[in-house]
Amino acid sequence: MANTSSRTLRLLSLLQTRRYWPGERLACQLEVSVRTLRRDIERLRELGYPVQASRGVDGGYQLAPGAVLPPLVLDDDEAVALAVGLQNAAQSAVAGIAESSVRALTKVVQVMPPRLRRRVEALRAMTVSPSWTGSGSTFDAGSLVTVAQVCRDSERLEFSYTAAGGEHTERHVEPLRLVSLDFRWYLVAYDLGRHDWRSFRLHRLARLRCTGVRFRPRQLPAEDAAAFVRTGLGRLSAPYCVEVLVHASAVTVRDHVGQWGTIEDREDGRCLLRMTSDSLDWPLMTLGSLGAEFTVVSPPELLEHVHEWGHRFGRATTP
Image (cartoon, rainbow, N blue to C red; front, side, top):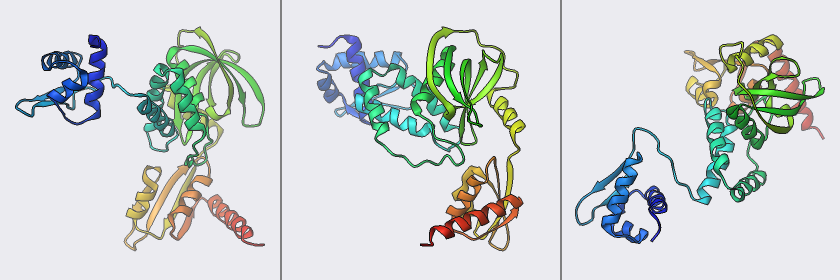
């Protein structure tokens, strides 16, 4: 018979695989008596797992929803599937889910044995996923996890950084937070070489080196990391405020655009779509995928962009 601790973990794993377990069958799976099974069930309850019991000839056990989420027990395949799913979610355009996915992925990767990490990396490398990051740029999920870990552990980080103009520099920083904003990831950190706070676009980081040197976090001169990044972007360039009259119902456009725009319904069956972006490519991609006619209201640069794209697509069809 397995020892009490390993048997309890095995019991938890079995309860998570099926909605309901008859008592005798569950005891048989664990190779224990029904009386021992009851003691193990009580032990799980003491640890915070809400296990419900039903009496009678066909009595058994099942996990029920609790007030908090207790730790889960995953087998190898489940752990790999979870890590890959979180990596994909970390690049999602769904508001709020990217940051949560990075935090969860960091926890999973930290306790994952090397053999499973290799499986996750192989599966990720051999899988092609569609990118919906708009005007943003792609990034490596492994780098994202590395940066998240040093932020959590207050560990100094070194990396090579490529600025917007193409200049390459070596940076030594004290990382504070990761920020997902406008389809891009940013690292907010104190730059030890410049003696000031900086925000770095994650896809421009290369050759990350964890130094192992811990530090006491400094006070950020902003309300939070996201506000710091927004302030920096505001100094660089003002975003475009796009207004387009779409020849489709507000319901149709709202289902397609989601939270990335505001839709004002009109009595003639059309709707006014408003979007804000630091690039005109993303609104134009969205409008092109709507499959409906539209009229540009503002800004004039968007109309010029439409004409430019139209000429480019027209040339693509000419032999």
